[in-house]
Length: 203
Image (cartoon, rainbow, N blue to C red; front, side, top):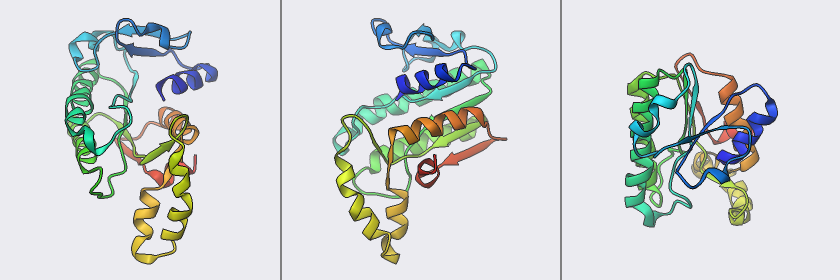
């Protein structure tokens, strides 16, 4: 998602982009952005390189989240947002964008949702101007199987007791996500704003 977002912003032509990467992964970035070598789990490794009055987009997280990755959520997703809040606060960033998750209660991904909810709490308490983007499942390369569930979601929306869950936990596409992130970058909130599944689908 990060690479797609960088390409979209470069195509727009109005942004100077810094991208945080681990040493050795520089070649994964599109040409045209400033490379910042650092560790997403250690704010001190990159906070002094954040440009003034910048927009900080946080996309760090465990790949292919599943209930079996509870400890990884705590070690990667949680620690990365804790450190990002420190770095963004120290750098006095203008706007923070956090890729969270749909927070409608579920049993299967409860641990993942709790970690992302904690990230939202940290940002709210930090007083940073923040946009929270809350997808559930993003359809894209390697992640197309949930499209088979679309008819099920459609039917559940017709059942009053299931309709809210079906709407809030529906799938979105990678293209809709990139459009949402670009829109959020261009439209900073007065303090906080949220883009839930319904908002993302409109993009």
